Image (cartoon, rainbow, N blue to C red; front, top):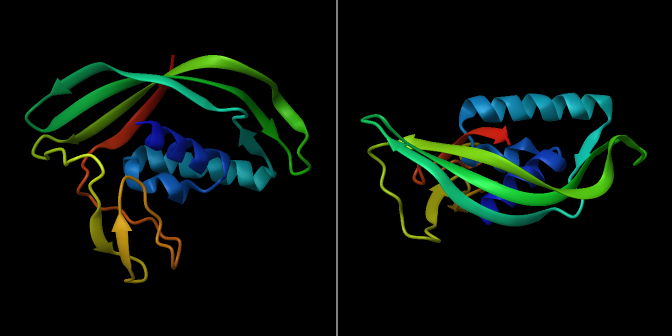
Length: 161
């Protein structure tokens, strides 16, 4: 969970949404991509300074004939502010604070969780190069997101608590 947390937030703060495409459902990923594009057009970037992952616990789970859903409550600590192209703070401040989010994941109920650390070999859908795919992967040759579909769980929503 910690690796996924840092990958999604790196995609956000680095203004590189492709880094999280493989672990996010299309709707939330498209929203993040649009927000990142808006930040980029304005010459602004969000900074989560001194980001630390404190804990993650399963806060809820539900299984229906179609989907399995798990809510993971994440506790973290960071400063949260926006900077312009010159690095000047334009919103927020640099004082770290504790914050909590619920990350909701879903997968088809027919999927089975693989063993931890499972890596799938796959070809890049963009350039065809062979790529080892794990939880989040970007093709090292063309920077396209490589989505394995074999992990099943996708982030569908993030709620700030």
